[in-house]
Length: 254
Image (cartoon, rainbow, N blue to C red):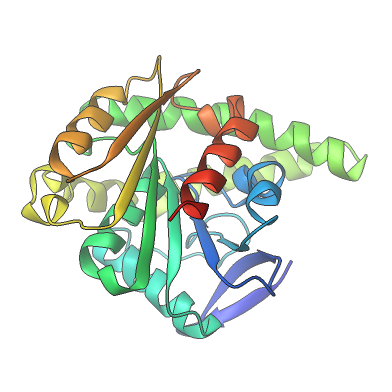
C-alpha cells in the first residue's frame, strides 16, 4: 500500500501494469476510496493500460486535510500527483464526486487529458445530490467489507468498521467538504463545461437519480456519448465488469 509524498502530503496510490504505453487514471467518489476500482474494474483496464488509482485527501489511507475540497483545489492535487509520478498525459475516469473532478481537469488542464469517462457525476446544484451521496457511502461500506473478506479471507472486525465510520464522521463534521461543494453549485452551467474538447463518455445508471445530470452534460459537451447501464447511482458496484469493459473499449478505440 504505497504512500507517496505529494506537495508535502501523504497520498495513497496503487498502480497496475506500469510498463504499458498509455495510462488510465481513476478517481473515486466522495466518502469512498480507490478500492471501488481495485478489485474488478482496474484489472480489466490493466490488460492494456498502466492504471493509476489514488485515495483523495482524507479518504482511504491518504493524509487527513481539513480544507481544499473545491474543484480547483482537487484538480490541483491531481496535477501535483501526475507531476510526482512523472506522467504527462492520461485517459481520465471519475465516479460521482470523482466525475466532477474529472470534468474540471478536462476544462482546466486539457493538454493533460486524452479521453474522458464520467461515471454518475451529480449536478452540484441538485438538492438530491446530498441524499444520493449519503446512500452511496452506506452501500459502499457494505461492498468494501465484502471484498475485504473475499480477498484476505479475514473478516473485518469491529475496530476496522469503527475506523471507517470515523472517516465519514471526520469528513462530514471536521472538513470544509460540504461548504466547498456549495461553492460548486453552478458548475454545470459554467462555460468551461461547454468548452471541453476531449472525446467524452458519460456512464449513468438507467435507474439513477443522477441520469438527468448525464443528459444535461450530453447537451453541453460537444460530441459526448451517453450510455445508460443497468443499475442506479452505484453502477461501479452493481456492474463492475460491464463498466470496466466499456471503458477499456472506449479508451482503446482511436
